[in-house]
Length: 374
Image (cartoon, rainbow, N blue to C red; front, side, top):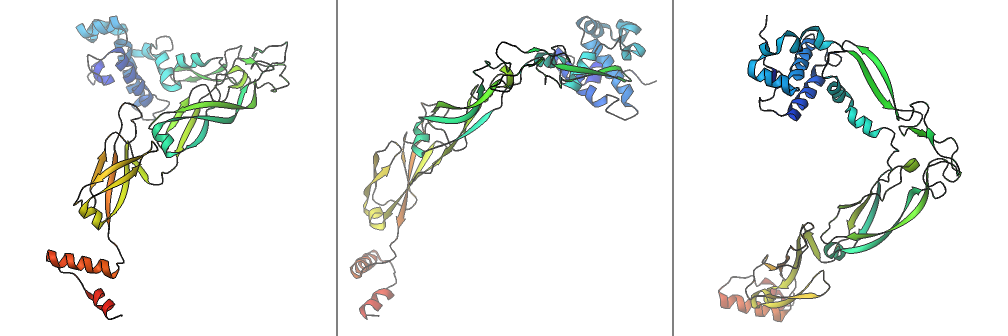
């Protein structure tokens, strides 16, 4: 006979595991080894072993006894082994098996008889680059299913009210029972007649035809936080469609789309501006006027001898951090030195004179052709 394994080993948990860890381990193993799911010949014995371990470790007193004396302290009947562990009366973990396979009896009960929640809506909002950086407010208008004013959302004609569903007796769910090797297994599903609401409308409202909602247009003022970016969404709870027959409204998701800036680009909280200057300006220095999202130009000094690709940083002139509005990125001015493609004769002669003075070798073919009139 194979040695009986330690209950903690069976469930794959430490001896210090709390009740929640033990319950999670049991549910996972129950789903894995349930004979109705796992067709392995050894699945039935493995499942019995898992259930036996859980019956002991989920009971504080029996767990304490087991920790002190092992299986011997529990006794043959107390260990939950043998036929009793699989019988319908002695199956201590049935509610947890139900939870593992059907999503939880408690959760099903919480949904019982509640009207259906309304659908979520999406609104695509287009804003300018500056509005995304600085934040703004926008008035939006969109079609939505709202509560019917005639029946107040009940769906019933004036002077009447919804009544209890006769098929499910107001529970909002129907149950079916099937026999398995474990005993009776209960399957719970929404009532097909009342669609899980527990009530039906016998005399529908003429305005909404029993839905409890009608189509209308809604206007909202939406605050766009500073620093929002392309693709971000703003969730407005309870601003979506109203649920049928008094159901709670869903949410409205405002999807933000940001237009490009004519001269600035953005990377997170950082802004970038590419400034084109001539080789003379790079050599001698100059001052530039750089556009900003605030609407005014920032004056930037380019020092003499500035090299191509030099970056000048304007601190705090970038994009606010969406989560920490007090923090703000920088504006980076990237200097591009533009080499002229065409020169006048005087410009060429001046550059050639500079090259000669600096001891630099340059091509003078263009100058020769110009002197010969070619």
